[in-house]
Image 1 (spheres, rainbow, N blue to C red):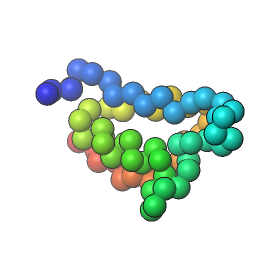
Image 2: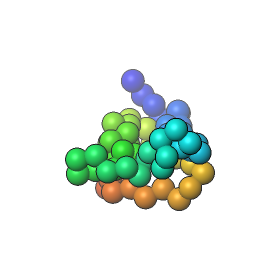
Image 3: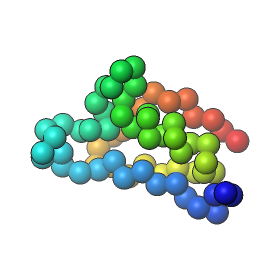
Image 4: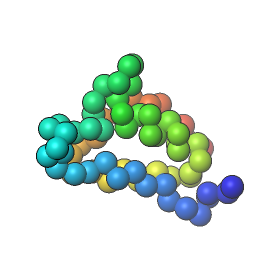
Length: 65
């Protein structure tokens, strides 16, 4: 499917009241959770927007086209 006209969006906000801390920044194996999500969609969209309440750190290497 051609996603060139679709903006990929990751909703990574929230108050984390039930979890207790920012889920996007939790380390699982060798990556933080947001990297797992980005790895799945980064090649599918021309641009990806991350919406969050906090500064998001990520490890994934972003490929510029």
